[in-house]
Length: 184
Image (tube, rainbow, N blue to C red; front, top):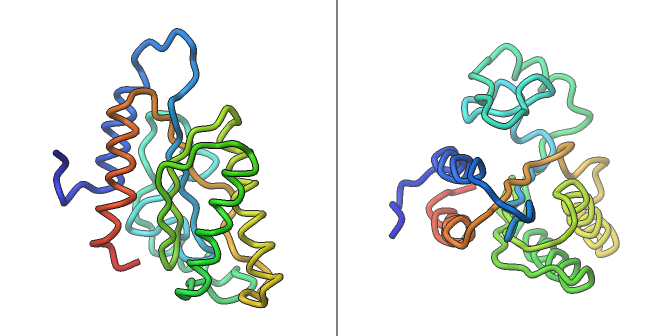
């Protein structure tokens, strides 16, 4: 149904078009939550990013800016965080625990070496979801001795609204299947 070469940017375009359609309840069926590990996806990165001036619906990602990326790298408090298989398994379990505790429906989760994708249904806004998922994951990693550095995650993250069943299906497919071909 979906192309194997679907990128996250292409998926966001598909989902963004649908978010403009009328929804009388203004409640999404689910969210595609994405957050990155500290220092692994800086502003100016060739993959694109958002900042305080480029974060509104419909605005383009920041373009590649090697100088900005290098300046941000110099300001890191410690080296970038890349997750080991043990850390990834712990984070996956933590996300499942939060979803069960909060009574959120977990559709898909995929913890990569430098970022996390989650598709879930919740009445809570994406900002709270992000905070809860990151907090529990960090707490579990620290308590098990699997993470000791100061920062694990970048600030913020992405919470895409999934308004229709097709949106949820596309996001789940992306998280489950497309990420298999991505080495990170």
